[in-house]
Amino acid sequence: MVVLISGNGSNLQALIDDIAEHKIAAEIVAVISNKKDVYGLERAAQADIASHVVSHKDYATREDYDTQLNSVIASYSPDLVVLAGFMRILTPWFVEQFTGKMLNIHPSLLPKYKGLDTHQRAIDAKDEVHGASVHFVTPELDGGPVVLQSKVPVYSDETASQLASRVQEQERQMYPLVVRWFCQKRLLMLNNKAYLDGNEIPSTGYAPD
Ligand code: GRF
Image (cartoon, rainbow, N blue to C red; front, side, top):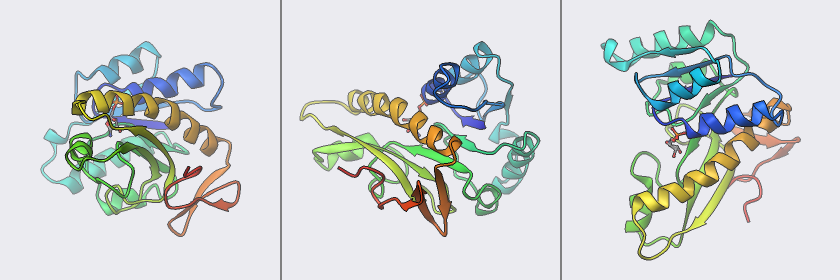
């Protein structure tokens, strides 16, 4: 698999750790970041994984950027592309290169709070429950079929960053699990729907309760 990051890389680390512990039968062949000097690149180096910086600042248009990103990824012929905190909107053309082979983790209970600032938005809305979703990537931003969600309670006096850190703790559990299912060939996307072991996954993800 190829993992795309933009920052800290804690989800990347969770994958590295589970692969090292043989919980996921796969190899991360490359890590790509759109930002230089982020800690996720250091994590890749420590795990001896090839890494590339493809900076969005070097390309005039989104199309040019995605063309270059696609060619770096394609040079590895990955079976799976994992977006792990990759903070870029992707063109439909790019997404279509990896239909059914690209996963993302989003810090909300989709379809709630697509886009940014999800934790603050959950607090502002006085939601009692918040969480994260792993989904297949389709051209619609944060709109592909959900595979798994994890929920956390929202406490009345907490800040967005306290809430974020509790959500991220869940993310580090759930993303490797979904990647494991994919690598075991138990998980697939067909006609915009996700299936696990041949069963259609409900729109709120496997194990909605
Ligand atoms: C995660 O909360 C993810 O859901 C969001 O960005 C954050 C990335 O964290 N898209 P990390 O870089 O994996 O630590």
